[in-house]
Length: 164
Image 1: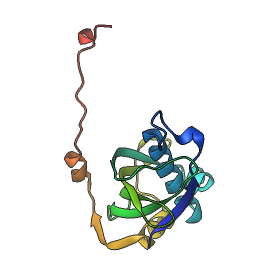
Image 2: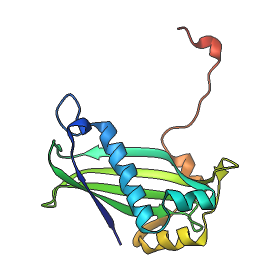
Image 3: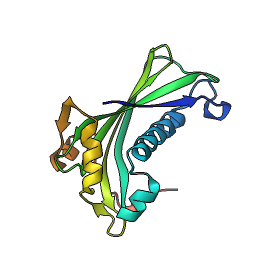
Image 4: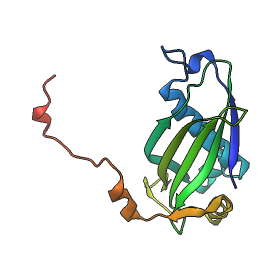
């Protein structure tokens, strides 16, 4: 299954080039995911009761066609990858105009965290069941090893190197 969420592009969603700003793509993806989660009975209130939260660790975008003010844009929520226990997930979001023109694609990889411990956790069975409903035959199985394949990794520096 694929979940779709509709947006009306507002003036405040635009950048200096008068098309949808990069930051708006990030916000639309986050809002589409929250709409999906609310529909599947894992919205903010329920997440708070469970003591868990979704955290995006890596996000990337490809843009194909500009989106302008006063347009309607439809954003998909698809589960592209998921660990067996659903602790790790990867969403793909596709941006479409109402006539089906594909304008952009985003990929977001994340984990569920225990809000008290601030550590990755396995979500409740209700979350696993909801995620399973949206998996497709192409959904890949993810593991912690997949984090090593992400393009960026932390590299600390000596604070003395910072000359401001």
